Image (tube, rainbow, N blue to C red):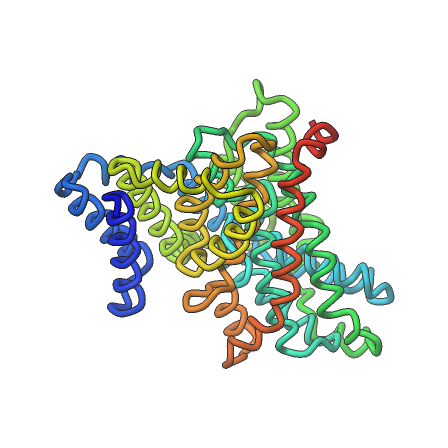
Length: 423
């Protein structure tokens, strides 16, 4: 047995014991796994490499932290409540459009923060009552917001798994917007219609509208939307005129969040920011742990071993391995699956378009947030709707999950032809 395989198995075993036996946080388990890997590899405890790895995803950490502050601020302002009420008012008679727009709202926080958990806990908690009000059962509602959170995490402008995969081969996060939209939007529409449309036949808007939260939109008017409008404008200007408006995502989120203070509602910015960062800490900790894990894999030669092993697989087996191993490893962390398995698979598929391939692999990795025992998106979705048995959500997610895997693999297979059209 090769030493690299022994090191890798030692790291994985340490992680499993730390997470499931010792009940340690995922971030701490990743750090311990990295240390054990270094010890087995004869490197001792390489402080420099651990620190360097911990800072490997600093930019991503800043994006998530500032995005969480932005999301909490607009939630406090009432923007998401206003959007939900507006969509229900405009489209209650057009059930297909109503469900699609509610799905997009549930995705929005994930698109901004790169975190499915953030999406489920913020927009999910707002959209879920509306979905149940219009007749969708509790299990289907929980499944919709869980998958919506995952789709939001993968959709642009912020896709942390894709950033991690790209970082593994020094590929900048540029040009991902169209492929990610092509992946997520059709699946979002399919999922919400597949799970919810049949239950909305007897929708009575007059009974529902009295239960909607419309105080903020009545009091503030159009000002309730200013932070979102400003953030979109700054992002677009950054793409159209990068030499003039190249502010960076963290600064855009902070400027947009601060603009909420001038919209007519008294918001304690410091207090809300503290709550936002506190909620983001588990995700930020995982990124630091993932960085250390990958750094030690690189130092000890494990990363190269995994890449070479992936390259030796026939194409058919490689796609099957991706479909099975990435979501299963994602049960530990979708970020961890992206770095440990996503990067090697991308390197094994360098003959395909790298941007589209990385996008599709990140989509498969996102399913990890539904996989037990961690199942962040699924468990939090169950909590939001008051469902005790998470396994019901997992069962309802099987068909959308299979659609995600098959669709992603098809995107990889035809990435060359798609790239010719997109770029």
